[in-house]
Image 1 (cartoon, rainbow, N blue to C red):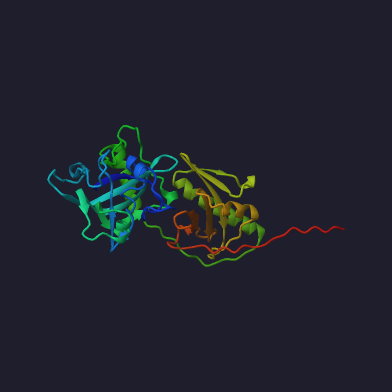
Image 2 (tube, rainbow, N blue to C red):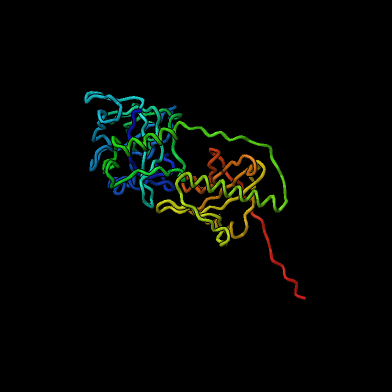
Length: 330
């Protein structure tokens, strides 16, 4: 397996630099200019994605510096080769709160030694002042991980780990192990059956549904490497807190026995929901007693609305209800 690690600035979607999804980190150029040449790394155009990484530190021009193809593990390239094909390109970035993680990948990508100029630049790239790229892949082979699933850590300040360069060839035990892990995830498929809907209002039944929902959410985040704590009895507006390094998510869990993903929030829960915090999650588990299906809802600053992890482009319909407390003065 050929692989290459490319470290960039942090973004939610890499669909151009905007007010709501502005690139963070990525070195002095990003800090000084407020943008980076990687801001469109996961923007698909005519079936392709065009990736950028700055191979040399301190360079001010996008075209400066070269990727040493001969250093790509299992690549077999010489110093005279201009490109190498079928490379697993692993994109990494540093979270705003700290810690470098895998944010996505291109499978079977082509990596160029030198900067490549567009013959006809995509509109979004032109809008962001981007003239070229260093890596090209097929859109169908590109994967940008949801923010919560960016949990594969990239060690720093560790022997065999990533250094200061944005291009890491990973020719070490640590590099190989991470590349193998990413390759497994990239090749994995999730199959979720859709059992028939069940409706039951029995309190004991509902308790089982909620427990199964909590269990499903707990396992999902635990498998991603989070440490979890239940705050269900603390009346804080959410049920679980999931921590990883400096990241702490507040997760409200709702369980349903049927397929219809329609839930209600208490006033306290709705208050937490309405604040639209970066680290708040609404986790809805349908078919909780048979084949639990998890839907993670998070507020996207870039999109200006709530997103559902299990359905691309899905939105939420929120209907506010009025309640009142009535006291009889008798």
